[in-house]
Amino acid sequence: MLKIGEKIEISITAFGSEGQGVGRADNIAVFVPGALPGEKVVAEVIKTEKRFAVARLEKLLSEAPERCIPPCPYYRSCGGCGLMHMDYSAQLAFKTRRVRDALERIGGLEGIRVEACVPSPEIARYRNKGVFTFSERNGKIVSGCLSEKSHTVVPIADCLIEKPEAIAALRAVTDWANAHGITAYDERTGRGELRHLMVRTASTGEMMAVIVTKGGLHFENELIETLKKALPGLSGIIQNENPDRTALILGRRSRVIYGSGIIAEKIGDLSFSVGAESFLQVNSAQTPNLYKAAIDALGLSENDDVIDLYCGIGTISLMMAKRARSVLGIEYVPQAIEDAMRNAARNGIENAEFICGAAENVLPKLVKSGHKIDKLLLDPPRKGAMREALDAIITSGVPRVAYISCNPATLARDCRILADAGYAIESVQPYDMFANSFHVECVVSLSRK
Image 1 (spheres, rainbow, N blue to C red):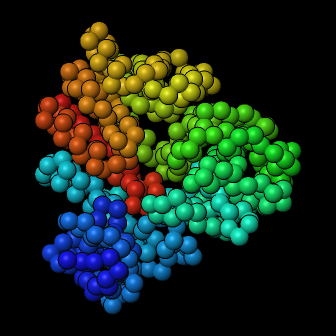
Image 2: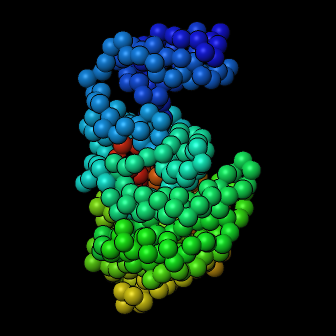
Image 3: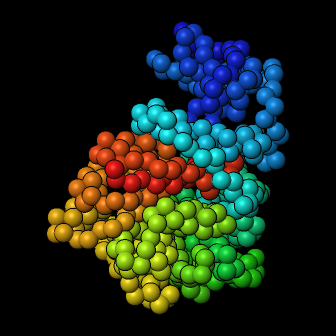
Protein backbone atom coordinates (compact mmCIF):
# COMPACT_ATOMS: atom_id res chain seq x y z
CA MET A 1 0.00 0.00 0.00
CA LEU A 2 1.42 3.35 -1.07
CA LYS A 3 1.99 5.91 1.69
CA ILE A 4 2.00 9.70 1.58
CA GLY A 5 5.58 10.93 1.39
CA GLU A 6 6.84 7.72 -0.23
CA LYS A 7 9.06 8.16 -3.26
CA ILE A 8 8.45 5.71 -6.10
CA GLU A 9 10.05 4.95 -9.42
CA ILE A 10 7.30 4.58 -12.01
CA SER A 11 6.88 4.16 -15.78
CA ILE A 12 4.27 6.45 -17.33
CA THR A 13 2.06 4.64 -19.82
CA ALA A 14 -0.95 6.89 -20.45
CA PHE A 15 -2.58 10.29 -20.00
CA GLY A 16 -5.22 11.23 -17.43
CA SER A 17 -8.16 13.35 -18.54
CA GLU A 18 -6.42 16.52 -17.34
CA GLY A 19 -3.10 15.74 -19.02
CA GLN A 20 -1.42 14.07 -16.05
CA GLY A 21 0.90 11.17 -16.70
CA VAL A 22 -0.50 7.85 -15.46
CA GLY A 23 1.42 4.77 -14.36
CA ARG A 24 0.80 1.88 -11.98
CA ALA A 25 2.29 1.01 -8.60
CA ASP A 26 1.02 -1.50 -6.03
CA ASN A 27 -1.71 -2.42 -8.53
CA ILE A 28 -3.34 1.01 -8.55
CA ALA A 29 -3.20 3.93 -10.98
CA VAL A 30 -0.84 6.75 -10.01
CA PHE A 31 -1.42 10.20 -11.51
CA VAL A 32 1.72 12.30 -11.94
CA PRO A 33 1.12 15.85 -13.23
CA GLY A 34 3.90 16.98 -15.53
CA ALA A 35 4.91 13.47 -16.62
CA LEU A 36 4.44 12.13 -20.16
CA PRO A 37 3.72 8.65 -21.52
CA GLY A 38 6.96 6.85 -22.34
CA GLU A 39 8.85 8.46 -19.47
CA LYS A 40 10.27 6.88 -16.36
CA VAL A 41 10.15 9.15 -13.31
CA VAL A 42 10.72 9.39 -9.60
CA ALA A 43 7.63 10.81 -7.90
CA GLU A 44 6.56 11.52 -4.31
CA VAL A 45 3.12 10.29 -3.28
CA ILE A 46 0.98 13.21 -2.03
CA LYS A 47 -2.49 11.63 -1.98
CA THR A 48 -3.81 8.10 -1.70
CA GLU A 49 -7.26 6.66 -2.33
CA LYS A 50 -8.50 3.09 -2.54
CA ARG A 51 -8.15 2.84 -6.32
CA PHE A 52 -5.64 5.55 -7.22
CA ALA A 53 -2.91 7.81 -5.94
CA VAL A 54 -1.48 11.21 -6.88
CA ALA A 55 2.25 11.87 -6.87
CA ARG A 56 4.47 14.92 -7.37
CA LEU A 57 7.08 14.66 -10.11
CA GLU A 58 10.53 14.75 -8.51
CA LYS A 59 12.95 13.59 -11.19
CA LEU A 60 12.96 12.47 -14.83
CA LEU A 61 14.87 9.24 -15.40
CA SER A 62 14.01 9.23 -19.12
CA GLU A 63 12.30 11.82 -21.31
CA ALA A 64 9.63 11.52 -24.01
CA PRO A 65 10.43 13.19 -27.36
CA GLU A 66 7.36 15.46 -26.91
CA ARG A 67 8.79 17.08 -23.79
CA CYS A 68 9.89 20.70 -23.97
CA ILE A 69 11.12 23.27 -21.47
CA PRO A 70 8.17 25.37 -20.22
CA PRO A 71 8.84 29.03 -21.07
CA CYS A 72 6.93 30.23 -17.98
CA PRO A 73 8.88 30.50 -14.70
CA TYR A 74 5.68 29.93 -12.68
CA TYR A 75 4.66 26.78 -14.52
CA ARG A 76 5.13 24.28 -11.70
CA SER A 77 3.37 26.43 -9.09
CA CYS A 78 0.59 28.19 -10.99
CA GLY A 79 -2.60 26.32 -11.88
CA GLY A 80 -3.28 28.17 -15.11
CA CYS A 81 -1.50 25.97 -17.67
CA GLY A 82 -1.15 22.21 -17.37
CA LEU A 83 0.44 21.23 -20.69
CA MET A 84 3.27 23.70 -21.18
CA HIS A 85 5.81 20.88 -20.76
CA MET A 86 4.52 19.35 -24.05
CA ASP A 87 5.30 20.65 -27.53
CA TYR A 88 2.24 22.10 -29.24
CA SER A 89 1.64 19.27 -31.69
CA ALA A 90 1.56 16.86 -28.74
CA GLN A 91 -0.94 19.11 -26.95
CA LEU A 92 -3.25 18.95 -29.96
CA ALA A 93 -2.92 15.17 -30.20
CA PHE A 94 -3.75 14.86 -26.48
CA LYS A 95 -6.88 16.97 -26.88
CA THR A 96 -8.07 14.93 -29.85
CA ARG A 97 -7.51 11.75 -27.87
CA ARG A 98 -9.24 13.21 -24.81
CA VAL A 99 -12.45 13.81 -26.78
CA ARG A 100 -12.31 10.37 -28.38
CA ASP A 101 -11.68 8.62 -25.06
CA ALA A 102 -14.60 10.43 -23.42
CA LEU A 103 -17.00 9.43 -26.19
CA GLU A 104 -15.87 5.81 -25.97
CA ARG A 105 -15.44 5.35 -22.21
CA ILE A 106 -18.15 7.62 -20.84
CA GLY A 107 -20.61 7.63 -23.71
CA GLY A 108 -20.02 4.07 -24.90
CA LEU A 109 -19.98 5.45 -28.45
CA GLU A 110 -17.68 3.21 -30.45
CA GLY A 111 -16.40 3.88 -33.95
CA ILE A 112 -17.01 7.66 -33.87
CA ARG A 113 -14.49 9.52 -36.00
CA VAL A 114 -12.95 12.45 -34.13
CA GLU A 115 -11.13 14.91 -36.38
CA ALA A 116 -7.74 16.30 -35.42
CA CYS A 117 -7.97 19.22 -33.01
CA VAL A 118 -7.86 22.55 -34.86
CA PRO A 119 -4.86 24.54 -33.57
CA SER A 120 -5.30 27.95 -32.02
CA PRO A 121 -4.15 30.82 -34.27
CA GLU A 122 -2.24 32.09 -31.23
CA ILE A 123 -0.75 29.97 -28.46
CA ALA A 124 0.60 32.87 -26.39
CA ARG A 125 -1.06 36.11 -25.29
CA TYR A 126 -4.41 34.83 -26.58
CA ARG A 127 -6.72 35.33 -23.58
CA ASN A 128 -9.10 38.28 -23.83
CA LYS A 129 -10.08 37.95 -20.16
CA GLY A 130 -7.75 37.80 -17.19
CA VAL A 131 -8.80 37.28 -13.58
CA PHE A 132 -6.25 37.81 -10.84
CA THR A 133 -6.32 37.49 -7.04
CA PHE A 134 -4.71 39.56 -4.30
CA SER A 135 -3.07 38.44 -1.07
CA GLU A 136 -0.64 39.73 1.52
CA ARG A 137 2.95 38.60 2.12
CA ASN A 138 5.23 40.19 4.69
CA GLY A 139 2.96 43.20 5.04
CA LYS A 140 2.73 43.92 1.31
CA ILE A 141 0.06 43.28 -1.31
CA VAL A 142 0.98 40.61 -3.86
CA SER A 143 -1.08 39.56 -6.86
CA GLY A 144 -1.29 36.73 -9.33
CA CYS A 145 -2.96 33.43 -10.09
CA LEU A 146 -4.09 30.60 -7.86
CA SER A 147 -2.00 27.46 -7.54
CA GLU A 148 -3.55 24.28 -8.92
CA LYS A 149 -6.70 23.15 -7.06
CA SER A 150 -6.12 25.55 -4.19
CA HIS A 151 -6.80 29.12 -3.10
CA THR A 152 -3.14 30.01 -2.55
CA VAL A 153 -2.01 33.01 -4.59
CA VAL A 154 1.11 32.57 -6.72
CA PRO A 155 2.61 36.07 -7.18
CA ILE A 156 3.50 36.72 -10.81
CA ALA A 157 5.26 39.44 -12.77
CA ASP A 158 3.87 38.23 -16.11
CA CYS A 159 1.62 35.57 -17.64
CA LEU A 160 2.42 34.27 -21.11
CA ILE A 161 -1.17 33.49 -22.08
CA GLU A 162 -2.61 36.84 -20.98
CA LYS A 163 -2.63 40.03 -23.01
CA PRO A 164 0.14 42.50 -22.07
CA GLU A 165 -2.57 45.03 -21.15
CA ALA A 166 -3.92 42.70 -18.47
CA ILE A 167 -0.48 42.38 -16.89
CA ALA A 168 0.05 46.15 -17.04
CA ALA A 169 -3.27 46.64 -15.24
CA LEU A 170 -2.34 44.06 -12.60
CA ARG A 171 0.97 45.78 -11.87
CA ALA A 172 -0.74 49.17 -11.68
CA VAL A 173 -3.43 48.03 -9.24
CA THR A 174 -0.88 46.22 -7.05
CA ASP A 175 1.32 49.31 -6.89
CA TRP A 176 -1.71 51.50 -6.09
CA ALA A 177 -2.79 49.16 -3.28
CA ASN A 178 0.67 49.16 -1.69
CA ALA A 179 1.04 52.92 -2.06
CA HIS A 180 -2.22 53.62 -0.23
CA GLY A 181 -2.25 50.88 2.37
CA ILE A 182 -5.14 48.95 0.85
CA THR A 183 -5.58 45.55 2.51
CA ALA A 184 -6.07 42.29 0.63
CA TYR A 185 -9.09 40.13 1.35
CA ASP A 186 -8.38 36.97 3.35
CA GLU A 187 -11.02 34.32 2.66
CA ARG A 188 -10.06 32.42 5.81
CA THR A 189 -10.95 35.31 8.11
CA GLY A 190 -13.24 37.35 5.88
CA ARG A 191 -11.15 40.45 6.56
CA GLY A 192 -9.50 42.82 4.10
CA GLU A 193 -10.84 44.71 1.10
CA LEU A 194 -9.16 44.03 -2.25
CA ARG A 195 -10.24 40.69 -3.73
CA HIS A 196 -9.79 40.43 -7.51
CA LEU A 197 -8.96 42.25 -10.71
CA MET A 198 -10.64 41.30 -13.97
CA VAL A 199 -9.38 42.74 -17.25
CA ARG A 200 -11.27 42.28 -20.51
CA THR A 201 -9.72 43.22 -23.84
CA ALA A 202 -11.44 43.23 -27.23
CA SER A 203 -10.10 42.79 -30.74
CA THR A 204 -11.37 46.33 -31.36
CA GLY A 205 -8.72 47.61 -28.94
CA GLU A 206 -11.20 48.53 -26.21
CA MET A 207 -10.51 47.29 -22.68
CA MET A 208 -12.21 47.23 -19.29
CA ALA A 209 -10.91 46.82 -15.74
CA VAL A 210 -13.12 45.45 -12.95
CA ILE A 211 -11.95 45.94 -9.35
CA VAL A 212 -13.62 43.50 -6.95
CA THR A 213 -13.70 44.59 -3.33
CA LYS A 214 -15.40 43.34 -0.20
CA GLY A 215 -17.00 46.73 0.44
CA GLY A 216 -16.35 50.34 -0.49
CA LEU A 217 -13.45 51.51 -2.61
CA HIS A 218 -10.92 53.82 -0.97
CA PHE A 219 -8.59 56.15 -2.92
CA GLU A 220 -10.86 55.80 -5.92
CA ASN A 221 -9.59 58.83 -7.87
CA GLU A 222 -5.99 57.73 -7.40
CA LEU A 223 -6.89 54.27 -8.75
CA ILE A 224 -8.57 55.77 -11.80
CA GLU A 225 -5.56 57.92 -12.61
CA THR A 226 -3.17 55.00 -12.05
CA LEU A 227 -5.07 52.75 -14.47
CA LYS A 228 -5.51 55.49 -17.08
CA LYS A 229 -1.76 56.06 -17.05
CA ALA A 230 -0.99 52.33 -17.32
CA LEU A 231 -3.60 51.71 -20.04
CA PRO A 232 -3.95 54.67 -22.43
CA GLY A 233 -6.72 52.87 -24.34
CA LEU A 234 -8.82 52.07 -21.26
CA SER A 235 -12.56 52.29 -22.01
CA GLY A 236 -13.96 51.88 -18.52
CA ILE A 237 -13.41 50.91 -14.89
CA ILE A 238 -16.03 49.11 -12.81
CA GLN A 239 -16.06 48.53 -9.08
CA ASN A 240 -17.80 45.32 -8.05
CA GLU A 241 -18.70 44.60 -4.42
CA ASN A 242 -18.56 41.03 -3.20
CA PRO A 243 -19.04 40.93 0.60
CA ASP A 244 -19.85 37.21 0.70
CA ARG A 245 -17.48 34.49 1.86
CA THR A 246 -17.58 32.66 -1.43
CA ALA A 247 -15.27 31.43 -4.18
CA LEU A 248 -17.32 33.35 -6.75
CA ILE A 249 -15.38 36.20 -8.32
CA LEU A 250 -18.11 38.79 -8.81
CA GLY A 251 -20.70 39.99 -6.32
CA ARG A 252 -24.18 41.32 -7.05
CA ARG A 253 -23.44 45.07 -6.97
CA SER A 254 -21.43 46.96 -9.58
CA ARG A 255 -20.92 50.60 -10.48
CA VAL A 256 -19.01 52.31 -13.27
CA ILE A 257 -16.41 54.64 -11.79
CA TYR A 258 -14.81 55.69 -15.08
CA GLY A 259 -15.82 55.64 -18.74
CA SER A 260 -18.24 53.01 -19.96
CA GLY A 261 -19.43 49.75 -18.42
CA ILE A 262 -19.19 47.90 -21.73
CA ILE A 263 -16.66 47.30 -24.47
CA ALA A 264 -17.30 46.46 -28.12
CA GLU A 265 -16.13 43.15 -29.59
CA LYS A 266 -16.32 42.08 -33.23
CA ILE A 267 -16.94 38.52 -34.35
CA GLY A 268 -17.02 38.26 -38.11
CA ASP A 269 -18.94 41.27 -39.38
CA LEU A 270 -21.06 41.65 -36.24
CA SER A 271 -20.42 43.91 -33.25
CA PHE A 272 -21.27 42.94 -29.68
CA SER A 273 -21.54 44.85 -26.41
CA VAL A 274 -19.65 43.00 -23.68
CA GLY A 275 -20.11 43.75 -20.00
CA ALA A 276 -18.25 42.59 -16.93
CA GLU A 277 -20.49 39.54 -16.49
CA SER A 278 -20.98 38.68 -20.17
CA PHE A 279 -19.93 35.23 -21.33
CA LEU A 280 -17.51 35.38 -24.24
CA GLN A 281 -15.06 32.79 -25.49
CA VAL A 282 -11.61 33.75 -24.16
CA ASN A 283 -9.78 33.15 -27.45
CA SER A 284 -10.87 35.93 -29.82
CA ALA A 285 -8.83 34.65 -32.78
CA GLN A 286 -10.29 31.11 -32.60
CA THR A 287 -13.90 32.04 -31.78
CA PRO A 288 -15.03 32.79 -35.37
CA ASN A 289 -13.71 29.40 -36.51
CA LEU A 290 -15.59 27.57 -33.75
CA TYR A 291 -18.86 29.39 -34.35
CA LYS A 292 -18.70 29.02 -38.13
CA ALA A 293 -18.19 25.27 -37.76
CA ALA A 294 -21.24 24.98 -35.49
CA ILE A 295 -23.43 27.01 -37.81
CA ASP A 296 -22.22 25.14 -40.90
CA ALA A 297 -23.03 21.86 -39.15
CA LEU A 298 -26.69 22.88 -39.07
CA GLY A 299 -26.85 23.53 -42.81
CA LEU A 300 -29.09 26.56 -42.33
CA SER A 301 -31.43 27.81 -45.03
CA GLU A 302 -33.55 30.95 -45.29
CA ASN A 303 -36.68 28.95 -44.37
CA ASP A 304 -35.32 27.57 -41.11
CA ASP A 305 -36.63 28.47 -37.66
CA VAL A 306 -33.78 27.89 -35.21
CA ILE A 307 -33.46 27.64 -31.44
CA ASP A 308 -30.22 28.58 -29.67
CA LEU A 309 -30.15 26.99 -26.20
CA TYR A 310 -27.87 28.65 -23.64
CA CYS A 311 -27.50 31.63 -26.00
CA GLY A 312 -25.57 33.96 -23.67
CA ILE A 313 -25.32 37.48 -25.09
CA GLY A 314 -26.53 36.28 -28.48
CA THR A 315 -23.25 35.90 -30.35
CA ILE A 316 -24.15 32.71 -32.23
CA SER A 317 -27.86 33.56 -32.35
CA LEU A 318 -27.21 36.72 -34.35
CA MET A 319 -24.74 34.99 -36.65
CA MET A 320 -27.37 32.33 -37.40
CA ALA A 321 -30.06 34.96 -37.89
CA LYS A 322 -28.27 36.18 -41.00
CA ARG A 323 -28.80 32.76 -42.61
CA ALA A 324 -32.14 31.62 -41.15
CA ARG A 325 -35.73 32.82 -41.16
CA SER A 326 -35.84 33.22 -37.40
CA VAL A 327 -33.76 32.49 -34.32
CA LEU A 328 -35.02 32.15 -30.76
CA GLY A 329 -32.34 32.37 -28.05
CA ILE A 330 -32.91 30.95 -24.56
CA GLU A 331 -30.74 31.91 -21.59
CA TYR A 332 -31.36 31.99 -17.82
CA VAL A 333 -29.14 35.00 -16.98
CA PRO A 334 -31.24 38.21 -17.19
CA GLN A 335 -28.25 40.46 -17.90
CA ALA A 336 -27.19 38.22 -20.80
CA ILE A 337 -30.68 38.44 -22.33
CA GLU A 338 -30.62 42.22 -22.03
CA ASP A 339 -27.22 42.24 -23.75
CA ALA A 340 -28.51 39.90 -26.47
CA MET A 341 -31.45 42.20 -27.26
CA ARG A 342 -29.15 45.21 -27.34
CA ASN A 343 -26.76 43.37 -29.63
CA ALA A 344 -29.60 42.51 -32.02
CA ALA A 345 -30.56 46.19 -32.21
CA ARG A 346 -26.90 47.19 -32.47
CA ASN A 347 -26.53 45.07 -35.61
CA GLY A 348 -29.95 45.85 -37.10
CA ILE A 349 -31.11 42.22 -36.83
CA GLU A 350 -34.88 41.89 -36.51
CA ASN A 351 -35.42 38.14 -36.90
CA ALA A 352 -33.87 37.15 -33.56
CA GLU A 353 -35.83 37.01 -30.31
CA PHE A 354 -34.73 36.03 -26.80
CA ILE A 355 -36.40 34.43 -23.79
CA CYS A 356 -35.04 34.63 -20.26
CA GLY A 357 -35.42 31.30 -18.49
CA ALA A 358 -33.75 27.97 -17.82
CA ALA A 359 -33.49 25.79 -20.92
CA GLU A 360 -34.94 22.83 -19.05
CA ASN A 361 -38.07 24.85 -18.26
CA VAL A 362 -38.55 26.92 -21.41
CA LEU A 363 -37.86 24.37 -24.14
CA PRO A 364 -40.36 21.70 -22.94
CA LYS A 365 -43.10 24.37 -22.90
CA LEU A 366 -42.23 25.49 -26.42
CA VAL A 367 -42.26 21.92 -27.70
CA LYS A 368 -45.57 21.19 -25.98
CA SER A 369 -47.10 24.30 -27.56
CA GLY A 370 -46.07 23.12 -31.03
CA HIS A 371 -43.36 25.73 -31.63
CA LYS A 372 -41.73 25.04 -35.00
CA ILE A 373 -38.06 23.99 -34.69
CA ASP A 374 -36.12 23.18 -37.85
CA LYS A 375 -32.61 23.29 -36.40
CA LEU A 376 -31.24 23.57 -32.87
CA LEU A 377 -27.89 24.64 -31.42
CA LEU A 378 -26.88 24.15 -27.80
CA ASP A 379 -23.82 25.48 -26.01
CA PRO A 380 -24.31 24.59 -22.32
CA PRO A 381 -21.96 25.30 -19.41
CA ARG A 382 -19.44 22.70 -18.25
CA LYS A 383 -22.06 20.63 -16.44
CA GLY A 384 -23.71 19.93 -19.81
CA ALA A 385 -27.37 20.10 -20.77
CA MET A 386 -30.07 19.28 -18.23
CA ARG A 387 -31.92 16.03 -18.90
CA GLU A 388 -35.26 17.86 -19.25
CA ALA A 389 -33.77 19.97 -22.05
CA LEU A 390 -32.42 16.90 -23.83
CA ASP A 391 -35.78 15.14 -23.50
CA ALA A 392 -37.48 18.18 -25.04
CA ILE A 393 -35.04 18.12 -27.96
CA ILE A 394 -35.87 14.45 -28.51
CA THR A 395 -39.64 15.04 -28.23
CA SER A 396 -39.44 17.92 -30.72
CA GLY A 397 -38.02 15.62 -33.40
CA VAL A 398 -35.77 18.44 -34.62
CA PRO A 399 -33.84 16.92 -37.55
CA ARG A 400 -30.46 18.57 -36.97
CA VAL A 401 -28.59 19.52 -33.80
CA ALA A 402 -25.20 21.18 -33.31
CA TYR A 403 -23.65 20.81 -29.85
CA ILE A 404 -20.80 23.05 -28.67
CA SER A 405 -19.09 21.74 -25.53
CA CYS A 406 -16.17 22.70 -23.31
CA ASN A 407 -16.33 19.44 -21.33
CA PRO A 408 -15.76 16.12 -23.16
CA ALA A 409 -17.22 14.14 -20.22
CA THR A 410 -20.64 15.82 -20.17
CA LEU A 411 -20.61 16.00 -23.98
CA ALA A 412 -20.20 12.22 -24.12
CA ARG A 413 -22.99 11.70 -21.58
CA ASP A 414 -25.42 13.92 -23.49
CA CYS A 415 -24.51 12.47 -26.90
CA ARG A 416 -25.24 8.99 -25.53
CA ILE A 417 -28.74 10.14 -24.54
CA LEU A 418 -29.36 11.66 -27.97
CA ALA A 419 -27.90 8.63 -29.76
CA ASP A 420 -30.18 6.27 -27.82
CA ALA A 421 -33.13 8.39 -28.97
CA GLY A 422 -32.23 8.07 -32.64
CA TYR A 423 -29.70 10.84 -33.32
CA ALA A 424 -26.64 9.89 -35.34
CA ILE A 425 -23.31 11.61 -34.71
CA GLU A 426 -22.11 12.85 -38.08
CA SER A 427 -18.96 14.73 -37.11
CA VAL A 428 -16.87 15.58 -34.06
CA GLN A 429 -14.42 18.47 -34.37
CA PRO A 430 -12.28 19.62 -31.41
CA TYR A 431 -10.95 23.18 -31.33
CA ASP A 432 -8.06 24.44 -29.22
CA MET A 433 -9.47 27.48 -27.47
CA PHE A 434 -7.15 27.12 -24.46
CA ALA A 435 -3.57 26.56 -25.64
CA ASN A 436 -1.21 25.16 -22.99
CA SER A 437 -4.10 23.96 -20.80
CA PHE A 438 -5.91 20.61 -20.84
CA HIS A 439 -9.25 22.22 -21.75
CA VAL A 440 -10.71 21.66 -25.22
CA GLU A 441 -13.79 22.94 -27.04
CA CYS A 442 -15.71 20.70 -29.40
CA VAL A 443 -18.43 20.90 -32.07
CA VAL A 444 -20.60 17.83 -32.65
CA SER A 445 -23.05 17.56 -35.52
CA LEU A 446 -26.05 15.24 -35.01
CA SER A 447 -28.95 14.31 -37.27
CA ARG A 448 -32.12 12.39 -36.51
CA LYS A 449 -32.23 9.01 -38.20
